[in-house]
Amino acid sequence: MTYYYLDSSVAVRIMLGHSGSAAQWFDSTTGTDDDRVVSSRILRTEITRVLRRESLPVTDRDQILDYVDTIPLDHAVLQAADAIVPHIRALDAIHLASALRSGLEDLAIVTHDATMKSVAAEVGFRVTDPVE
Image (cartoon, rainbow, N blue to C red):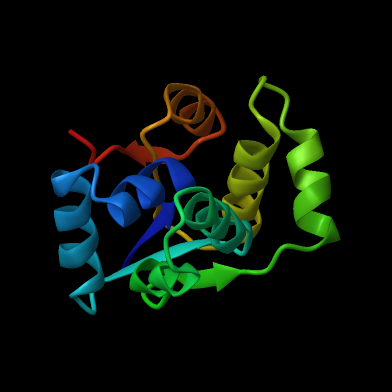
């Protein structure tokens, strides 16, 4: 089984219809038993904030979140985020720390953010970007 860690740079583009290729990747990945999509609980908050900013129904987040296994946000994740040495924004550090603490093998980080791609690769993750 392949696991994909979904970060907000891709999730929000899917949610708002800004990337057909990312939406196609998400649909094909979540439509098979061979792959699983996971993310931190913080993704729910990030998507909610975007939907509120855009005056869209908060329930629209379920179009994504119903297909994503959630990694809890706890003190250990926050400590792991603190320990990431390369510079990265706080929420991205939480995402990477969640991925690191997930214990999942063969986990790829799905992101469109250049810094996230670089730091994720530096800490040992495979990286994929489905956004065109």
